[in-house]
Length: 200
Image (cartoon, rainbow, N blue to C red; front, side):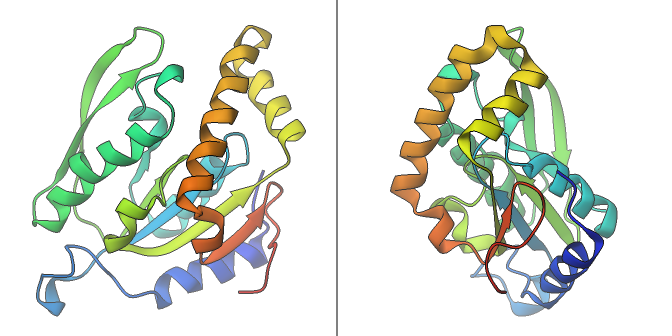
């Protein structure tokens, strides 16, 4: 998925117009300087591609929740919790965020990454716009594609041997989204081909 330039331009304007909410609600207004953009939606919908386009547009860092999940079996909930604990709460306290990337193949945590304060921070992945992220989110973007297309994309990337993992993950994320009502809470809705689903 690549977001067409007119849609991307409108999305960039939405980010510029959104209020910065980091470091956090308790900080004096002059210190709230970071706009957190949360790109959420089911696996295989195109979130990573959109996040890359936004990172280029804003020359900003991106945190991928794929680096925070502890593998296929863990499901998406843990990624949102680690995002809050390791990245957003430190930034809200005026410190850099820090996390160690989880290596899915090795089944262990790998190198550390530091997330410095910036005018825009993009986070993407299943759970990026979970309710526990709401205190700091300036804009929540929901990206969706139908299950058949998502599975096709996933297996094209990960191989047919990953089908069982993908089917289990799709069930786990469906339960997550039912609890979180993420789609209903999102500010912007895009389909899996980068077109807007609903009016902004």
